[in-house]
Length: 168
Image 1 (spheres, rainbow, N blue to C red):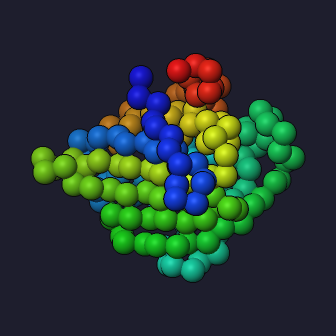
Image 2: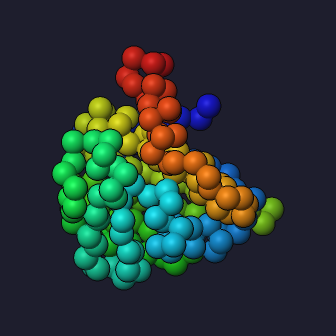
């Protein structure tokens, strides 16, 4: 099971990095990363991404996540779009975290998706790992046109043991 990798940035922050190969062109994968109809099934917050650098973002905690965490119902956090290269790169702040999405053609009509989630500490990165992993499973199903008949949140809970510091 590919659980991503963790490294330190030059300024001491923690970067959680996932790479996934998809047999679909970058433009198709891009739509799953930016279209609210797709995001609501796998992204850990309700957000509409405006593809304009400097745009303000509001992340709302979905009701299902509220039931599973210490976050109060209706919790929101803020962010802003840092970089947009349509079909290739999307980077934004979510509170103090940086999410950097990059799509690279693989030469065969598909692409590589890389997510680098930079946060302040390793425990926080590991906590996000299971959610991103489960989210990518939903993305794979969406791209393949398969129904998503499971809860991304339940799947993240199942995967969480793989994302604990002492599991490796």
